[in-house]
Length: 318
Image (tube, rainbow, N blue to C red):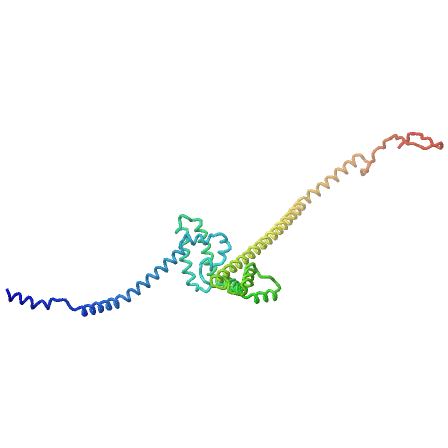
């Protein structure tokens, strides 16, 4: 028994735990290895998570109801004239990206995808489709870009220093093109050329949007006015042509009837002359002459002044 106990005691050192210093070193090594192993995976997950959040944020903005409400908001008749505003893209966006954005936006507002608001979705879809067709046409796209460039030049003049604005007005002998420039000038004078809201990127973007919408609206009004004038001119010419054709038609009908009745008129005249001659030959008096009516005797009172200035009434044969 003693020997077995002794043997057990001798074997205890082999079963004892390692020292504290060795244990801490081993744990640190394991943590470093685990960190080195999981670091790329964590970075990938963080990148993926950020992309998912960005997509969710984008989709939250591009919800069907929000897009339909945006395209049908009050004043959308003029706001939707700018195709870049409708598709929410920058004018410098390549056409390939424009097509992708159009497909995504058209899917959101398609009437089949919005059964609860089919009528509104149809109007919104037409606006998106019209904007894409404008940008698909190279000529129309250049015109839209020129309008935006014109708006940018106006905004740059509008938010410039007061001295520049005054010089421009004096040189052109005119006032500012709208009340926004006057308002900005008042701000410049009030704050003594200190930075104002329009100097910030957000303020500049807001002013740019306002002027761009105004230019597109002015162009549309001019186009509608020209179309109305052209339609009125076409209507006037059509009425003149119709009236001229009616007169020509009536003249032709009158000439035709006159020619067709020529023989009838000649025969009637010949018959009349024949009857007149036959009556004269029967009476034996030759050609018939005009016979005046028989005279009728009338009596009328006629006062005659006598030598003694006395009125005497006598009857005179008329």
